[in-house]
Image (cartoon, rainbow, N blue to C red; front, side, top):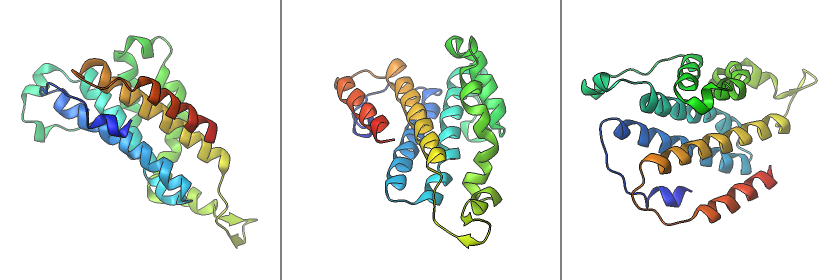
Length: 189
């Protein structure tokens, strides 16, 4: 997937010049989370969960929710909504397949409370490092980690689909290879 991103050919415009890099960055964060987990670098892995999700949501917000008139303004003055909950709701509303089942809200809402904690080494992350409230340990919550890895597969897959659906003019047909890699990742979880 990461190698394919460098082979894509796009016709850039004001809208996709914003959301293409955000989707690419979301994919890169997801791949980084996978490798950080393999190296047992849990705190660093957690720190990338929020940026991966925010980049995907911001990209989808720009693609689907920002008016053409807003895009005519100086792009450096554009501000993204700060609340993740707002981005989730707005993106869900604008994408028919998402809207009919509140796709993002159903999958992401339960994670929102942990995002700040993951990113900033909050009290919940610190508390998880103590066993029986007394002993500092590097034990990891494998269920939580598997949940994060599954989320990263979802985010990177959704991001990749967005990149290739509307924008790719020429790309090598590696869909079978991508399918095999995704299946391998899911088996390793």
